[in-house]
Length: 458
Image 1 (spheres, rainbow, N blue to C red):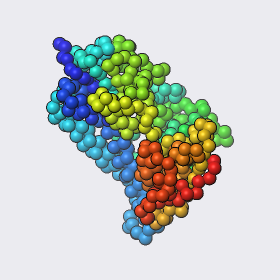
Image 2 (tube, rainbow, N blue to C red):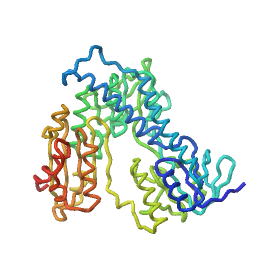
Image 3 (cartoon, rainbow, N blue to C red):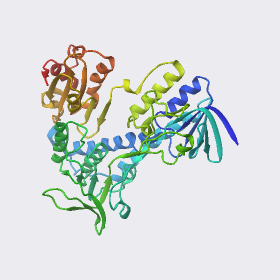
Image 4 (cartoon, helix red, strand yellow):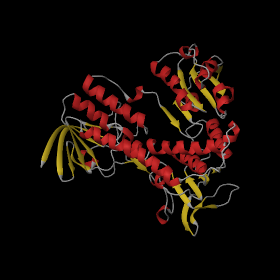
């Protein structure tokens, strides 16, 4: 049986449901197909559960520091891992159920559960049904990749999904991968009470950041007792009576670690390998990411790709912005482009890293004349009062245009304070618009105008 719609949305992640809302409000008949969990990565295995667990880890950490603030705890701090995991699962379930309920109550939207596969450029098969539409939007997200790890098929390992379900604190958690996901879990589980080691193939953590950011993050983690092994180019896993042997051949380091649990956090891959994209003629790159243009259209007329699966962003906020771009262009005749958005994201270790625009390394490579400002978190009254003075902030300006090119704020509140910089960048204003602002005292943001007033040629 063939059912016809004006539009079909494949995937109920961060872009799919709001797009369904805009299209149905415009009078379109829409089918939304979801094969597993409503809400996508963010709600189910990403932001919602992980930041919930980060919050639990922060409470445990601060409880252990209570005496620094004049607070006396009468019992040793212990962590109930089962309750931590349950709390995260409860919040994720609440969000997931909210997304599903909203879609099912949406006038003009038909929700279909099942695995969608293309039959042609305008037809999908789902759970024995055939769906046809002139407009199809792919929003299928991504998952953890374990490609390239020797021995992964011979041991039990954790991913960002399965680690959320642990009921006990690991004795020794080895995190393979020193980037954003791995670092958040490393600090989190160290604060829960596990021995934690990070094994990173590259010469330093989070290689896409400036070296000084990597070095400071490494120092923060090491100060909490996390062991870091960089330049581990020979990573392999093997069974061991006590869990898993993680073989690493780092200079002047033992050749292996024995872990009770291993988290593989080496990257992500898109969920595009089983959609039948070849039958629709949709082009993908060597890793499976769907090729899209500046308006998020694929090479096939009438098919768009949004969110993690298009390789143009790997965040909830970029997926949502993909929805905004597509909806505004289709329904309002706008000409919004992916390249118009300012790249911005955060790393949710504690203290967090807030990032906007270029790194200093990228700015120097552009050949632009630069002005650079830097401030230490130890200069910030708010940080001093909170007893959290680790970190620094840095801002990079184009000396000719006086526009802000990028910023890094690694420190307490950095993930929030960076938004003032993002707003000025989005507005295309010169840095002086922010320099001459009058921020509230005491806040982390109040150091930004001071930093901008002390720019030096870079």
